[in-house]
Length: 546
Image 1 (cartoon, rainbow, N blue to C red):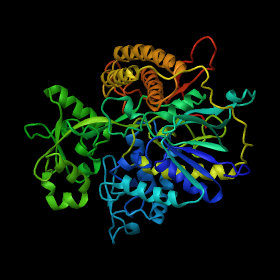
Image 2 (cartoon, helix red, strand yellow):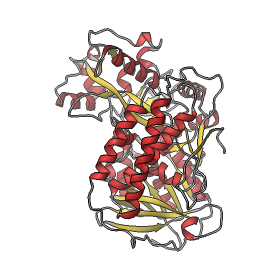
Image 3 (tube, rainbow, N blue to C red):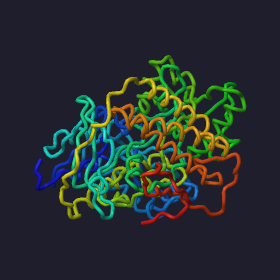
Image 4 (tube, rainbow, N blue to C red):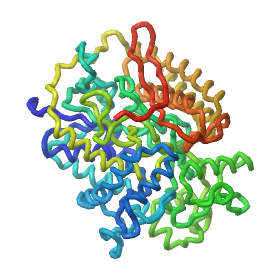
């Protein structure tokens, strides 16, 4: 690639990363890094769909109102309105790319629209019950065919290269990234005109999650270490309905199934959602997840049931073929049997503080998608707003990069392995990984207490010390890097939760069960690193700084 036209490095190959790459590629080279195979992005796991304000019965105001209601008072209205206003164009952009959405000749744009929890009307464009996969396959094929896009599988970013690495006394700027070529077991410095973080969320910090193996909070952790603020990390969305089965622990049962009339029931067949919310199964996800958690604990259950048998076999096969087939392969005929479900960590509503152009606090660094905190999701994400945010802000991010004067490519220092050696054993990583995920599940889950959070923080600090020592003395591996990032994110989640002395949205505390009349986002600011001791978060609640 031409040195006179330096590449933009996009870290992550899901919808956010591919949107940025495709919008940039006609004007210059783009390198896209995926730490596993390209097909393993979280986007491909999304079943529901993407919001589009398209119908004559819908409006931007209605979508903003639903987003605010789900976000429990912490949604940035300007952000929500901007994204709602651009939702139709985002859906049209995907249609133009060739995404095969489910059709309805009488529907807007010829699309079939469905409804999900928290939405006032049908406004979800979808491709049956495998929307994410349909979108990802189309965009990935387009990216593979573009001569200016260099797709690199099994490359994992380690850390951002900033002014500090270059010894420059200047406002913080990003000049590239260090990345591990996993198969070659080699670390390279990748200088860049700009770096875009599109690494997804941090669901793997919990023992039970609907997320793929890639969701280890890499972008959040790297940005934090580079000096960026993070926001609202206490708000981890637990999807109410993950399949409960010993052979399948990460299979999500889409919210659209409840949108079409599936009912949550106890073992005796009794419905229970009416006792928790007047909207019953169509209540926002945080309410449904807490209701299921409450009923499981009250009755000593391992799971509850989601009953869709009354919808009929033909309807289920047509509209939910993936769920029908997967469950049938596991011995569950959803047309004749209710589905065993439990809540599971699903979406990270907070992340790297960024604006409507994807800009983070460090010049030359951008972040898009689940890795970010833009103010859209507030205290709880409205269903199907996530794919929409990826497309809308992925496009504005690319626009900003293209309109900005590229910084001169820097002579970045090579990765230094002169003081480390090969790891003598991997059991330390495996043990710490399991311990971290279990303590987060038990102490920082759907229902929290101050004592549990404090215990979690104490153990996380001990784990951090062990991991930092291991990182300092041994050559890096993907498992070590993911563990390092997960423990960083775990601490950010716990510290954010300790700051919030109320219950709101996805954060529920038994010690502070009421919701304050006025509240602000939680923003953590990393103090300058000293040579004497490691940096720790200064936490405070503040308004988002533009």
